[in-house]
Amino acid sequence: MRYADLIDPFEPVSDPPPKTLAKFYIWCLKGSLPVIFAGAAISMIAGSVEVCTAWLLGLVIDSALTTEKEALFSDNTLLIGGSIAFFLLLRPCIFGASSAVSSILVMPNVSAQVLSRLHRHTMSQAVEFFDDDFAGRIAQKQLQTSRAIADTVVEFINVVSFAVASLIGSVLLLTTINVWIALVLFVWLVGYALLIRWYLPLIRSRSRSRAGARSNLSGQIVDTITNIKTVKLFAHGSHEDGAALDAMHRFRLKAQDFGVVASSFRFCLIALSGCLPVVLVGGALILWTRGEATAGDIAATGAVSLRIAQMSGWVSFVLMAVYSNIGEAEDGMQTLAKSRKIVDRPNAKALSQARGEIAYESVSFSYGRPSGGLVDVSLNIEAGEHVGIVGASGAGKSTLAALLLRLYEPESGRITVDGWDLRDITQESLRSQIAMVTQETAMFNRPALDNIRYGRPEATREEVVQAAKKAEADMFIQDLKDHLGRKGYGAYLGERGIKLSGGQRQRIALARAVLKDAPILILDEATSAMDSALEASIQDALIRVMEKKTVIAIAHRLSTIARMDRIIVLDNGRVAEQGGHGDLISKGGLFSLFWNRQSNGFIGVDRAAE
Image (cartoon, rainbow, N blue to C red):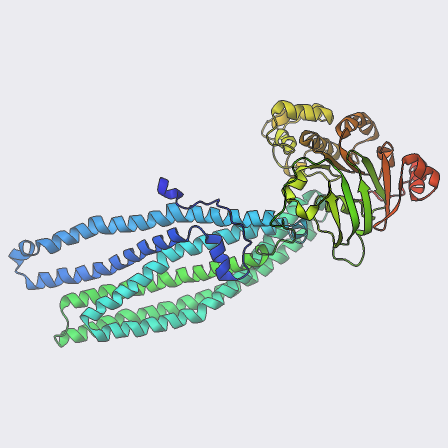
């Protein structure tokens, strides 16, 4: 079905989505508009064909009344043959083509096209975008908006275009019978349009509110399920149930508001539709009594009026759905069409093979808050140097790493890699040169093999296994088994790696970093979830992994960074002191205080993640 590929559903767009509804629709549908309008044209032809059925019916009736019974078929061979060909060949072909365009070509492709564009734009957002919203709500908005826009397009093709052509054709047909009957239909259409003009904005507004309440409900439920273990541990099932019921109640009220407008709209339209056959057929009968209309004219008028009356109810229902979809698309646009806060410059270069020289030049960043983060930090890290970062919780350690990865932009100052300002480097190429192992390691609900291979997707199975062995992960991976009986590297790890212990997740993350083999390595509490014995056994592996790499190791457990070339101590977002392990101990400053507390069995530094 080559014609099914006339729309490329995954064609990328370079510009961000606009924030006005009409332009947003055009952005979503760019590339498919010619096919959509072609489908609308075919649907209009189908609508015109429906009017022709009434016209043919009138001709057949008039011929039957004016022709002798014995000669009915012989004298009307052309009319009868044409009518048979029309109903058995032409009409099915046109309606079949219209259905194929909307069902095979437009609906599947447009839905995928809109979703792929919204998803790409969402994925390009800065981390802050995801920090401020429910993951479930964002996903719901993407699916809701793509479905709403695709449904709008299909209804525009199948119904709106069809109805417009049918109505225009009906007016023209009735004009051939009598101008006054056509005028009555025109007046009725004006009333119909005014009623729609009054109600549909209300439907759009109520639908937008209903969609917002639905996505909030989805976000609430997903948030609870995602954190179900915490809910169970704190015995807060009733509390979460109350929060869910509250969200359901708000959605119910918005749905009822929508239902009130929708039902009153339907009632008014059906009442108005009922007037049309009475007026048009009654008018045709009056003309017939005066000899100004034939029996065929009455039949054609009756067929047209009944068809329009039936179609008006159908069209009103569809228009209600269209405006409902427009409201949902508008609601999704308000969430998804936000500008990206971190974008590549037009002339940004790709960083191919970094040496690993890093510089922070008077960098300040506080997440938009009055305090926290980093304050006027200047640091130079040589290529291949191993640097430890310590400090109390909230001192800015993780912020230092996040800014290097360009997950956030400095509010002042700049960061360079090999002399390149990060803003002059593409984000993808920058992050490809950095491997990171975090305290809270992210896992996908995919096989262990794929979770490790995420470090380098083209890696072979043998390379993955070797990386796992270096990270002391191979042994426990061999013993994995999921609920479907998949074992070892083929076993699925569950959502967020829930089936693994914290130490196991960190070893898989370390294996991922080993496999990536990037010139810059960031270890953010990379062994915090491991016991002392396991940490000791993995230290030699870490030393091998860190060879010939620039390493930034963030740690609360100070013994893990004792071998670093240099240790930097942060305090309230500033560099308080730096130097070798022995020098800092002898200096008697903050690092010495931290070291003495831990050496004496006290935890002087909060281990909570920043």
